[in-house]
Image (cartoon, rainbow, N blue to C red):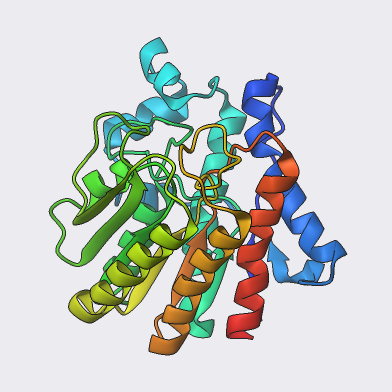
Length: 300
């Protein structure tokens, strides 16, 4: 059964610039339930992640400043969010959601977090709407518990997974793969184990051919026994920040490629949803909903 970690939308007052990208976290599960793709009992709300798990990935000084509200104005500005204790509480819930999704995937081959994908959070700083790194924390938990040997991170958000790359830059047991817009944020890229930088306005066929090549190559060479998938939908042509020109059908085909590869090779898969900033919220919700629909079809 498909199980989905869900943290309700951040309830602290936000201006429209901050509120808009977050409403999808409530709209996507609502749509999936209304259309019958999932039942409400397939959603679960995680508790806050333990500090010990945070500290497997993030520097103690950074976490101390984050939890006590002592980030500098510049550090707060880099995150993109106004600081509040409620924001940190929600962030901890998101982190545990990906941990729980990963544990579920070990038993049932796939697990989802309806949020997450906070790949711009470094060991010692946050940026780009990311304060803590959920894939980093969940991957470290699996490793430290001896549950996996080799992890592959497949990051297909339009923005490079710079924080994840930094976290695992010296860890041979976690291979980071990021396929992202060359001219997009962050302007100063980190170094993943494999970076595939894409030109502006790339369309479906070229994108899918490139992904097919690299994904199959990595499955053969890395031989992962677990995959974390960052499934941002900001690759859409409609995205205000994306700079690529994929259709909704192309985005769906991307997800299908990743999901079917994991199913075929019996590799457990944890999915975090990542970014999406189209002007029409329906474009974002539909593209994310397709990922869940495909998982239901492919795995169950």
